[in-house]
View 1 (cartoon, rainbow, N blue to C red):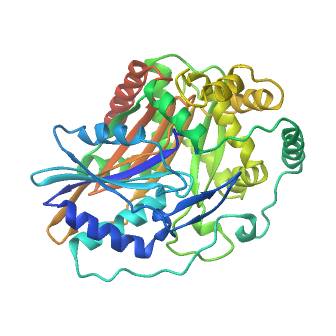
View 2 (cartoon, rainbow, N blue to C red):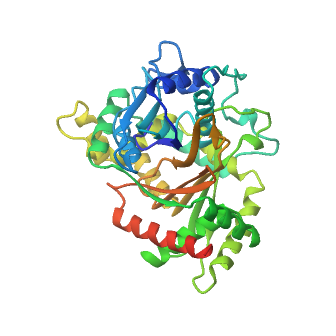
View 3 (cartoon, helix red, strand yellow):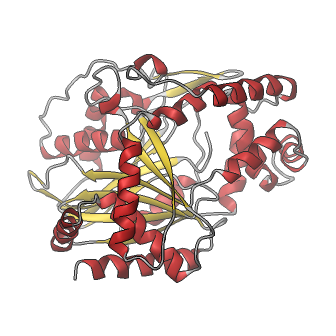
Amino acid sequence: MAPTSHISLGLQVRGNISEKSVRDAVNKMLVTYPLFGVRIVWNDEMSESTIDHAAPVPVKVYRRKSEMSWLEALNREHAIPVNLTRGPLTRIILVNRASLSYIFIFCHHAICDGRSLELALREIMLHLGDPDRIPPVLPAAPPQTPDIFPDGVSKSRIKSWFINRLNKKWTKERVLFDQEDLHNIWESFWKNSSYGVELVTLDQQDTERFLEVCRAHGVTVNSALLIAFAKARWEAVEPYTGKIKISTAVDTRDRLGIDIGNAVGLYAGGITTHFDYKEENSFWENVKTYHRKVQKTLKDNNVFGPIFDQIALDPTLIDALLFAMIGDQVESHQSRYEKISTFARHQKGLVAQYLDKFSSNIPDVMITNLGRLAVPIEIHELTIERAYFTPSAGLKMEIVLGVATAGGCLSVSLNYHDGYMDGAKIKKIRERADTIIKTLIS
């Protein structure tokens, strides 16, 4: 339940959108996807989610004053703590003025992935285009657990042994954190940081040209973008030391052992590739080398590895890692100052050991690409011009990319927390990456 773990997906829409029409469309979307309206039942540990007695999903309206007013609105929403036991974990944000609007679905990553946001936003837009549309009702889908993994997927014996050892040790050191602890750390974190986004955007013509160039070289857009940003960091800031750790988020819906259709939830896995970037090689030589390497990994079931690890690890230990990382920011006037600051500043034993191991495995570059969104460009009198996808950014991950294409236009967001990353350095990386990509299609 980290304060850093919200994800959002927004659309830039030409046409008149009212708060009431959005409210009506959201209510209908929740018929199809009630998960976005849940609260969490949390006693000593989180046990389940439910829509019973949950607060309604809010529609928050902001006035558009500039092209980046949507980011200012997101920042305000980031700083508002989630009330887990009251809910919901979702907000709808409307930034508008005259005939241009930005509509975002903003949700905690604990219950959804980027594809889920796309599916929910698609329903909202279809209802906006046709207020008389009847919301489809989908069958319930199970959460992503080993029960629905495909045949042949198994967890690593070495990792299982290590995690079992961690869990046993943690039972002797365990410290439990509750919702008030979470509110304390949420307040202090956002007092010291804000959410930064740098954008690389292509218009329709450049987007088509970029796709053509990638196809001509036999690589994916993902591979080209990843190497473009790795090259940009190498040239604009400093070379990497050793191999570059590149992580790619993977939608697992089509890999599961059962058909879940257009279900929403956290149906995601990932892979990490160690890539030896060679400055003496051309850009496309580096991209092709990376592409060949990552394609081999994507064909197997390694994408489920991180899910096994998360399920096996004691969830209260995951909570503790969050408080160990950022708990030292809690201030003396806050209600849980003594508990949280003592835990964070005098950390030793298992949590400290795990944090050291965790830090050594943080990727240098991470990407989540939703591809071309399944949302029509024209919906009645509304025209979708562009999408903005902002995945959650880690505290130590330098390059976190969110990619989506809508209205025929590709957008890449470079996401970071300015309390932890040097915004000027991130801007240099974005500027260099923009130049590299535009050069490729010129």
